[in-house]
Length: 322
Ligand code: ES4
Ligand code: ZN
Image (cartoon, rainbow, N blue to C red; front, side, top):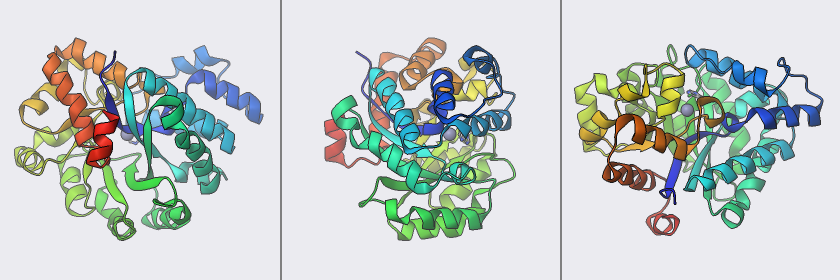
């Protein structure tokens, strides 16, 4: 039995497996620039975050209809459930779809259909977090928030906002206004920071965006004062070990700072980021860190417990999910 866990850092577009990509391409009459799934898989050799993002945004061309998004999310939830995930807080990138002429309503209705039946079908509770692309303008982010208004909790599935895409050169402060507006709408706030970007971006995400959780946060270890603050304030970090190796943020998994981060008292969680691209789902990430870093059973249970503590579940819901 896999450890029951919550997945807190998961881009639904990053769960698009090559087989589903080709099936959706055929269904929608889209021609992919790869002969078959094998050739596509061979392209999964990334030098850094940007080289991954280029492929990730390109492959989204196959996602066009409500059914496509429902099938994508349903396939993810089935795989997650098989690896012990009981609760998933799922990111999506509306601007990447709007840019291709696929509207917010199509995306949210499709994802929402899979999410609505997830507890009954897969035993996984879900929430949806809409991410702004940090390499797009602040104005575009504000328009995206406006377009999402009909789909916000409690009427719709969107409970929060996040910030993703190319980090370096796009510090969090650019999005101060839209995060303020999101907070005023009662939305939860998270942000990617310190994946490739410097520790100062983590500080800025906390101070300027009011981020309640930091996605990645890996580079906090370069700033001892920041570590003290994250420990003191119990700010959760959603680490993604296999992602860090594939995007070359760490050289090899055996050198991942996770054990040092836990020893420092940081509230770390282990997540999968873009599992179709990075070699595994939540349980695969747990197994990989156990094997490469020699984490004890107590440490692994701590990581699983942290995932619920760091989630946006209320405490009575949290107990049920565990
Ligand atoms: C992402 Cl690993 C990562 N980092 C930043 N933005 C992203 N979007 C999808 N995966
Ligand atoms: Zn991510």
